[in-house]
Length: 268
Image (cartoon, rainbow, N blue to C red; front, side, top):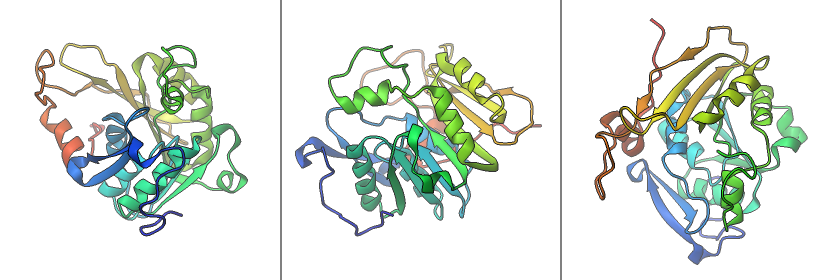
């Protein structure tokens, strides 16, 4: 368990101190050490964390937690959670531990492959699971020079395994939340069959009139409600990007800068 005061100030394995930068998230309420080169978190894990309707006292597991961006943003918004992350790469696992210390949060970070989770973890159940799997199938994108970025963009673990592991670790009526590329939605829906139900999908479109590039998915273990495809969340105002101008819509800016929750539409 990583808590404030454990190893503060030590560089993570694999990341020399000079190779790291300290970046603000949620308007500075969360500060995260990230590699200057390689995989750096953008808005995606922040949106994912905002999508969880978690409540104090719940147990939350993140599969592939990287440097802890989503878990720590969630922990800032909802105090009192029991947070656990699984990360394959040792340098990012250590970075997640350091970031927990930086933000005075308690996070258990387990270094493991999803395909071979330690026995102790396989005996535990969680109320919420979140995941931001690699967006590309292995070999389906231009190779990155940095190994960490390469794995983050296109890991070898199929999406079906991510869904299966999540379903097995969820308690009955627990929720999975996942963010993924829109063109991989058919894979996710197929993998949910027989494992998770009450599936809801919220497309994330960059601008009005533009196709969704990402989707947020929510699914429930033991859920039996009909599939729901929500209206897209539009991220930016205007028709095109203007240099040096932040164009996030008000509700999105509140999520990214103020730590607001992402509101899922409710059934009428």
